Length: 398
Image (cartoon, rainbow, N blue to C red; front, top):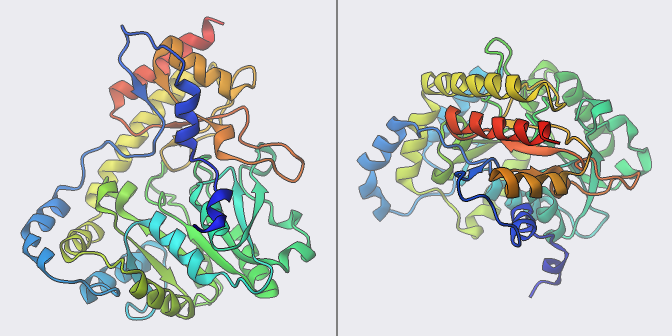
């Protein structure tokens, strides 16, 4: 077997299961999980209708490039959403089976093993960035996201010598687990560094359509390129998904878009990889990308939950003001996120994800996720609010 497999860390949910294995939860309280970022809102019905209407097309092999109408629909959506001058659906867009698969595959295709191959990732982070880097022969470079820097990476803190060994930088905006939004100024700073040191920017924007201020959607990497008149999107690639936007995580549908010089070899890699999206799923995806009304309804539901949960928890927990995504990132009273997680499960039958399981010790030897929790507000309002009330009661009980 590939010896690099031994370098992979257990996934956070495996570690969480081990933490809870010896605990006994109260049987008189229903279990409320706030752990996995799996949307529980109803999936977009028209996408399911399209899936059913085209089910006979499961009998056909799909092409790696996807249907022309799907690529055009994606290009139109991204152009409108991020104020672009346009995306070429033939060369700058590629449908993929969700962002997780695409992120992993792209790193395998992009890293050059013949030279130093650092992959910069925000810390704490979505673990696929690290795993993909390790299995591609790369070395993760952890960029701490702390209170002091607004829970965003501080690119100016990285030395020129370190940048010379970086082949790829991952951005996650809105952030998982922090919910922090990367401003256009940060994107532009990173683009300038990419030009100077010749690395790829991979921007994971799968939470971009879940934001609290309807008049202020999170910007994206391609938007920053457009403002710089960089319409070839050189060195830049974005990853988007229908999982959160349209409550369709099981559809496994998303896209990558950006630099045609990156898309072309990635398409060739995916042709050998054999991971083309099935035709009925492509038709369902077209229906979802063409409709915005269901996304606005979805945002409204998350706003209601954020308002209710923050009102409940703000008096007893410190957390950054939510901007986007469906996560809350509170500090734990007392600072021990592992102990608090175990106590919360054992006494209140609520499961949360300790922040330390999503981070690694940074340059100063400190895990920036330690002492915090990731609360995934994905269920309907009533159980989510009930979970917040139990958390507050536990804290107030001492």
